[in-house]
Image (cartoon, rainbow, N blue to C red; front, side, top):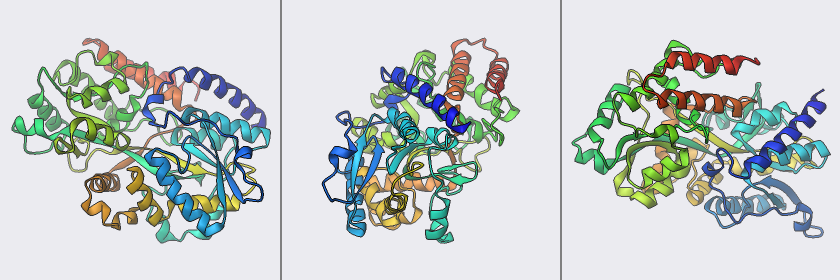
Length: 445
């Protein structure tokens, strides 16, 4: 049954991915090298050379910062093991369908990239090997404790299927220069304080806060989940059913509406704005505060200036603990029937060692998954290192892994449509819209 189900899943995903290639719903959010092209693993092998095969969207040793960082770690892996690496590089949105097809056909790579939102799909399709036996053999409790959010990341149904190359935590980017000019000297800790700060900083040139509301690029979940959790609510319960119509969660939806129509700290046309558009608007100076991931830091520093930018945590209802950082990630996993799972594990293990994580972060600008990587002097003295450490400290205090059920795309679309409805009409019935969205998601549960 699982094999038949997987065949149907592969066919469906391939069809969806082909449609996504024309401008996928969140394709622009992944900054990947535009020059990357698919390579044949077989053609890349040198006769007699010991190699592992890798499926991903970044080529270790390539031109981008992440590729250069991965290239340095590949050198240490080769020095330790004598193994090289052949890479099959595809667009980020093609990694999941390519993996499922390769496993189904009996010719999987040895190691694969695993997207957070794809983990449940791939594990449920039996396309990934659990890593638990390797972990229990090679990782002691101290090592596990050194990982950020060990129990949650890379886990599905109680088993560990992947280990992150790095994480993408979110934070509030704020225009420190504008806040100072407005006489604001204290960071908001509660949502009430946040709205007051945004109102003071609001102007015709720059809105106090910016978020995206268009369901054409359904990514509202990136701010909705942490906002809902900052009020003590959840999007899904332990069984996977939607519970974002709870009284606690409802406060977040009502606050978003209030930001648009009452406080007027968000642009009036927010319902038509996509994530990519709002990111560009923040870079252009048209917003004072903006919620986004660490992967966009370099864009904002280059476009706005490091001296004008600062990061602060998300507010919460009472301010005692910050609202959580939303966390996404790309990880490494071992496909089912990998021809060399032992060496594939060695590649993954080398990538996530503390020293490797420090090296990768320094070169790529990504946020490492190991806490002890922060002991490197770079993260104490270098401005880029200090920014990375800020994210690590924030996640350590208050972080939440993005929910990623098997039907993630459906959940994301339903939530984005609900938000768009709420912020399109000042007379919108928030409770009715949210309850209907919950019912729609739970219809097949």
